[in-house]
Structure formats: structure tokens, C-alpha cells
Length: 392
Image 1 (cartoon, rainbow, N blue to C red):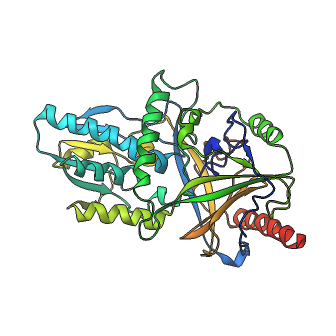
Image 2: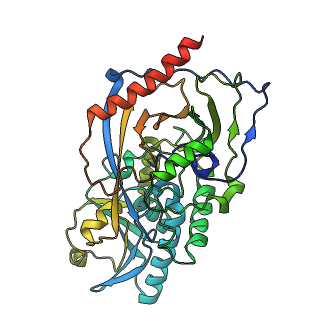
Image 3: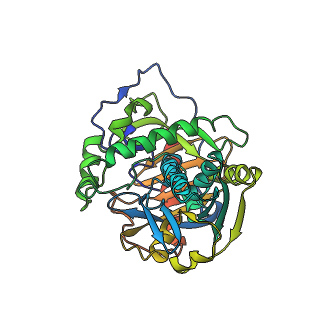
């Protein structure tokens, strides 16, 4: 739910700090008609809050012994959980299978957590030949990751530049590429669990001015690595006046992956269960309670919950709130306008007040929805489309 990366990472110049020049759209390349969003407060059907599990050193992927259990950690991905899930989980699964071999144990693995990382870990373990049981307090749609914006944001609050190990950038790239190519296999599936959508960044300030404002608001240097994968990152495009319907001085367009999380998470659960997986509702208070599990190898994919379960104070909560507007099938794009992010998904139009800079929501563990803030964000959307209507 990272405001900065909401429109598809550094492919959007000014959102991700990419030095590449955007391609300028020729005046003849007039955009197709964009249907307006019906932005009224009474169309808000829910307001949700998600706490992203940020770790300055990046995701935790090490192996730990807890009593007679071998635990492979797979948590702490900040705002990149969905985006990096397949790549990160492939690393965790490789370590879990190696542990089984070392222990000469039966291929029976437990996964703790049923969110983005838990489900992908479980499915990949099955593909590796393991019997898998997921133990979790919640399952979709109750899990925190079900409240994410659903954008491809692989380096959204993934780490701090000065806190990562020297080999982390290469590890990130491996996770990113693995995930991206896995998502390609979900394109075109029934229910559109994953699809490409266009995103528009609108501003009265130049991209350079907007970027300077964002950076001045940041007190921490978050890591950004998308220059390493620019071959899979569509370039942003400057939209000259007359080629788009927006009323702002500056407009840019980019294309990015969208995760329709309702259908996508349902697809993951179904795939897991079809292959014989089991899900048991269990809540663990301490790592010692894992001793009651029959499995010798456990993948810990508890996300923000690992802060309490593992007493991991390296996890910093980053709060993000979404107002959900009733979906409009005719609307299939995203917009950033006046620090408000809008993305039309199949399961709802998400509206988030993203604040300025990546410090927004940092170290805020409040999970109570703020209806007033949600309505204020929707008013900004209404103002945008009111201006667009006035131009006609």
C-alpha cells in the first residue's frame, strides 16, 4: 500500500525516483475514453487498515532451531509482500526441503500463516513433493494481506539502503524476477486474479518538484532497486495537453500489474486444497507452542504477526488505510492525484490517502479505521472528476 510505489514502482518517474526519461506521447496518440469514478461517500462500503511489516534489513529468510523443530522464516516484506511472494517463498521452500533432507525426515511440512507468503510457500512446498498443513489464526479474507492495494510494488518499503547486507540487492532481484514470471501464468485466468492496468500520475508541479517535495519529507533512506529489473518495467509516458482528459498541468501514464486480491487469494486457497493441503485454525502465542505440531520443519510466514509471536522488535508497522468504493466494471485504471491513490479493481475501487513520502504511516500500529479520513480522500477524487466534467 505504499503511496510512492502505488502506480507501479519506479516506472512512474517522480513516484519511484528513476532517472530514465519518460517517453513523450505524440499528440496523435489520444487516450481511449476513461470512464469517471462515482466518488460519493455513500458508495464507501468498507474501510480497512493494513499494517505492513517493515524490516530495515529486509525480509527475514534465515533458519532457526526451536526445540526439536527447524523453522524457516519468511516474513518482513514491508509493502512488497504480494509482489515478492513467489520469489521469497521459493527461497524459503528451498531451505525447508534442505532441512528435511538433513533430518532425513518425512516430507511433511507445516506453514504458519495463511496470507500472501503463507499460501505461496505452501503451494511451492506441494510442488516440491511435500505434504503441507497451514496453521493460522485467520485465512483470507481476514488476513492482513487481504487489505493491500493490490499493486505490483516489489521494492515498496522493502529495506533501508544502509541496513541491508551487500548481497541483498541481488537477492531482491532474484525474488522480483521469480515472482514476476510466476504472475505471468495468472494472466487471462477466469476471475482475472492478475491483470495489467494503466495508471496515471497527475500534478500541478513538475515531476522534479514533486519528487523533491517527497524526499524532503523523508527522514529514512528507503532502498529502491527497480533499475535492476528495468527490462520488465514498462516506461512511463508524458501526456501532453490534448492527449488526455485530465485537468492538471502534468500527467504521466504507466502500466502495472494489478492483483484482484479477492479472486487471487481464493485461487491460491483452492489450488492448495485441491492438491491435498489442509488448513487448521490455530493461534500460537509463543514459539515454544510449535512443539505440539507433528511436523519437524516449519515455514514461519506470519507477516506482521511475527512481531508478537517471535518478539521481533525489528519489525516496524507501517499503517495504511483504504476506503473501498463500490466497483464499476467500466473503470479499469488507477490515478494518483493530490497524494490520494485510486485503483479500480474487480472487487472494489480502492482509495487511499497516501500522505507525502514513504514515512507516511511509519511506526503507527493503529489498526482502527478512520471514517472521516476515508471520506476526505473520496472528496478529493470527487473534486478531480468534477474538474474533468467542467472541462467538457
